[in-house]
Amino acid sequence: MNLANWLQRAAMRWPARPAICSGIDTVCDYRGFAGLAAANARRLVVDHGLRPGDRVAFFMKNDPSYLVGMYAAWWAGLVVVPINAKLHAVEAAWILEDADCGLCITDAGHGPALHEAGVALHRILDSAGLADADAAIAGGFESPAERRPEDLAWLFYTSGTTGRPKGVMLSHRNLQVMSLDYAAEVAQVDGEDTALYAAPLSHGAGLYNMAHVLMGGRHVLTRGDGFDPDEVLALAAHHGRATMFAAPTMVRLLLDAAIASGSDGEGIGTIVYGGGPMYLADIEAAIAHFGQRFVQIYGQGESPMTITFLSRADHADVDDPRYRERLASVGRAQASVEVRVVDEAGRPLPAGEIGEVVVRGDVVMSGYWRNPEASAGALRDGWLWTGDLGELDADGYLTLKDRSKDLIISGGTNIYPREVEEALLTHPGVAEVSVIGEPDPRWGERVVAFVRANEGAAVDAADLDAHCLAMIARFKRPKRYLFVDSLPKNNNGKVLKTELRKRLAGPA
Image 1 (cartoon, helix red, strand yellow):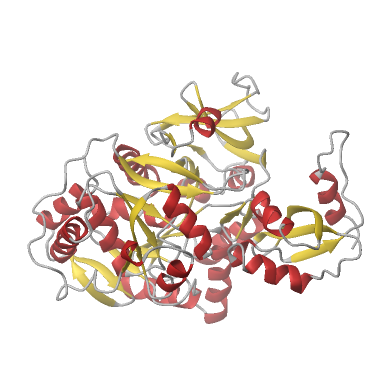
Image 2: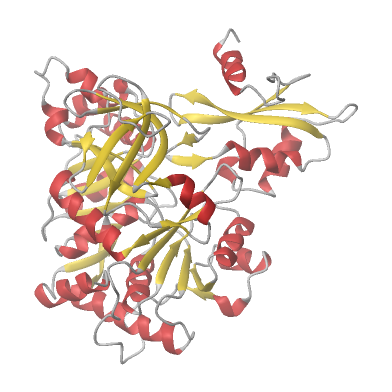
């Protein structure tokens, strides 16, 4: 079944319900939302020659036209390829080529840069007008294109340790099951609920739109550039019953803004947090101020938003003798998946022993786009090997201990050191480099680069910063450069990142 069938169903059942809002202003009701999706679906097919199964990318900031464009793509039977709007245009152009996208829908802030990066103008469509009912062409397709449950719907590119991102293939079934898990485990939805998008639609926050479309909920886009906690608090108070996904950093910023303004979080129904480690002190402080409005989820792009959850009841059960221990966990398996902790051979480990977290179920990806080797490494005997280390207790609560990969999570965004290292190594003055994450009280982690310069080379932090900005997204660049005479290595010549972490943890 096509995901767009949910929008068609909502438009039939609740045509006059507010559907999409920009700030406090209503853009369209559900009848209008479905009409815009159908009209723009025809535009994608007739004007741009796209056919079911073709890929259409989205490289833009949050905007009502993002939601309209996604459902237009699904209505036409196309595959949505969301691209992080913070990426460098060169990085986005690589994704467009790898995914063989026939079209990229973008905004005025990204389109010119994409063209300068080598993308032909006929493959770039400005999003302006997609959500404008008066500008929409007439005669949209009456019903969404036929799609099988296993057909590709969402091709999400996640960074990899090889330095190139991998395309996670998610089907209509995957996303529908994920949405039903949301309703079953995270938060029930009806027409009075508000999905407040304070984080990018290209990632986890955007995936939660489907549960709200299914039940005719309201979708509210912020107007600020980036995350503005004061705007979020104001919009939640205005619309009411707001649910939002937030990285731990965003929860901390929201708490600080609420304390400063005297807000108690009026209108916030549920804050779903995840995407990185949440400090126990921070979630305790947030609960103390906002009350029990929190649910934690643990997932990956390969099993989106759906591995484990720590329920609202878990957050509220302060009388449980293991409350703080539970609060430091990521909860128990969601309804549609099985979760295990296994040894290197894939054998399940008993409660309390640390191993790799694996998961299987109808929400797990079918594999990586055109990358059978990576797919075989991640999917073994029906299980997704997450690369995360953790332990299960006797009651099924999972506590993450470390990452087997060197992933850095800063502000809820994944950064892989290899990408940064490869960029720095193209600088003529850099001989060796090793990148690690350093704990940061606000962002979770920040990127630190240990650099050994070529003999006689005059290299400083400002020079390397400028070099990175020309190569990779701004958020990936190191926040600190440490120049060293040598890097610690083992007998095989591999850099010992554990030793570098010890240096950071030692006396300044």
